[in-house]
Amino acid sequence: MDLGLKDKVFIVTGGAKGIGEAISKLIAAEGGITVIAGRSTEDNDKTVAAIIAAGGKAVEITAELGEAAACKKVIDFTVEKYGRIDGLVNNAGVNDGCGLESGSPEKFMASLQKNISHYYNLAHYALPHLKATKGNIVNIGSKVADTGQGNTSGYAASKGGINALTREWAVELTPYGIRVNTVIPAEVWTPLYETWINSLPNPKEKLASIVAKIPFEQRMTTSEEIANMTVFLLSNVSSHTTGQIVYVDGGYTHLDRSIS
Ligand code: NAP
Image (tube, rainbow, N blue to C red; front, top):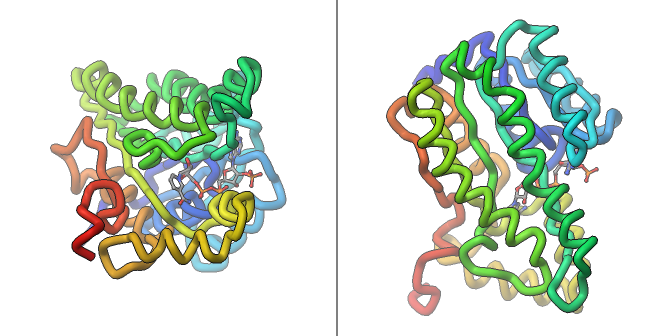
């Protein structure tokens, strides 16, 4: 199947590591140009180099996305360099453990800043350019919006908000032919996941107990499996899909675990 991404321009936030890295690489493998926006120049450069070594096209823009000005900078950079934006993948986020008991009003607001404000800010600044290309937006959410997790109010509120914004933006942007969808991971081995699991008591045992509860094949989802769905939704092959929240999680969020 030709996804039709050749020479189209896609911004991937947090595109240097984990799920974002897999998305960045797949876009380039399909002939698209990936703009990796993330906070570490060194990490971004590594992924750009790997993409170029594989024959693809990518550039990096270093940005701490919690700041609105940095989000504007990402959009301005992309438009100055390529003159267009065909898609935005809002992916960067952090499960930062700001709980009701353990957190504070200041930590809660800081968590929203890290997890949801840049989804809005980037979409806002990208909008005129997405209108010009009839491009589209894919957000990366989390099952925590449905299930809760405990001790992560800021992250959970952000991910719930992202699901709401998916439907809200899909409605607002339909007149412009812009589609908006969200992909939901549950358990994917990435640097973020490793940090989170190691923050728990007995991480090895905890990991084994989580993996045993994943209904489909009792294994974690790979970043590449999240990327496959994301890039499909980004492409015009999914031209009549909008406002959808798609779970790529081996059935972890919805299926009856007692049957597996
Ligand atoms: P990851 O391994 O930490 O990779 C995320 C990348 O984004 C890192 O390079 C990170 O930089 C960068 N980043 C994060 N916040 C940023 C910011 N404010 N400004 C600039 N760069 C930023 O994370 P991941 O596991 O791939 O997660 C990607 C997305 O999937 C997130 O939205 C997460 O909530 C969601 N998700 C993941 C899982 C999972 O099982 N892994 C499950 C549910 C949802 P640093 O390395 O410097 O932090």
